[in-house]
Image (cartoon, rainbow, N blue to C red; front, side, top):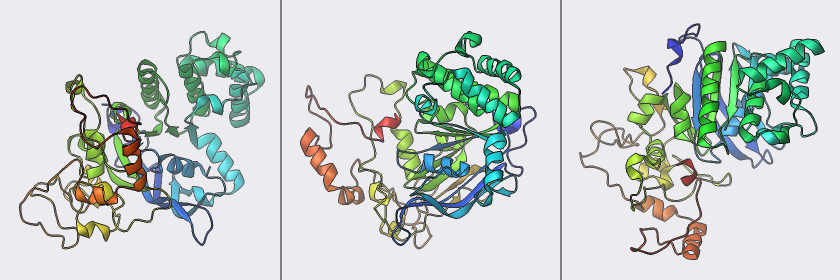
Length: 409
């Protein structure tokens, strides 16, 4: 795992004033009188020089949160509540000129697909030169020299030649390095990396993550890494925010999240990640039953309750509010689960707030709450694939479609 931010030379302590603070963020789509809410009351902070991970299944609101920081939510989407504060400045209240300066100098962004983010009829050097001249006021000669230096810094071999190349002439990993060079050309203090390792092989993925870590050390740059891969988060992040159904359900230092997850969704995600011992094991790792909620689903109480092995009747009436994991250790993070099934002393009643009888909560692959909430679409899909929901008989082949949860493995 990466070194924590306060251990890096020239980087502020992670407990000092935040570089970025997001609070109560809400993103809606559709008509104002009947909106579809995609991001609900999201809050997170990033200290100078810190790397924070944002993880969850597809559709949980990670990319929308990232784009909201840059004010890149286009119609029919809109930010309807909350604040995005960057060093004391309200990003959501910025004028057009202030917003342009903010995007040009303070924050950079790496998008999910580098190929679609680059103009196919422009050379790589043209992309860099345009950015450097517009944002740093360089001459053509200065921009060319700096562009080649940027390509060299991100590890592209023969940078003078690649400066003249077109995007289609580069591999996926090299295009991603070009995007990192573009995003950091103005030396921003915050880098938003939205799925920076998508569709890359594991070797190239490791190189990109090492590059982000090195640049954080060299430039003192804070980074928000959006990913669905816990391996990526473990390799580079200091802290992690887990999102589900548009909510942040757990936050904390990456070491604590991995060793002692306090939200059932976080633990279920970690349990689905294969390890070395699982190689060649005929028993499938337990996944999460059901599907993530759609935007049209309005679920009372905890949004994860229909899929949760620890759900109780009171979970349908509790608010999705983050509570400290340990009141005596505020740096330990917070969780939105009042049941706390993994706490010392056993789970708690989410309504009464007191410990129940010391009996372990039964955990089964298909708990009653999740089975009751299983959609007709899932039932039909199982019938079509012949998947009864349990292990196949010895020698029996079974073909299933990968789910979003399986894509996190």
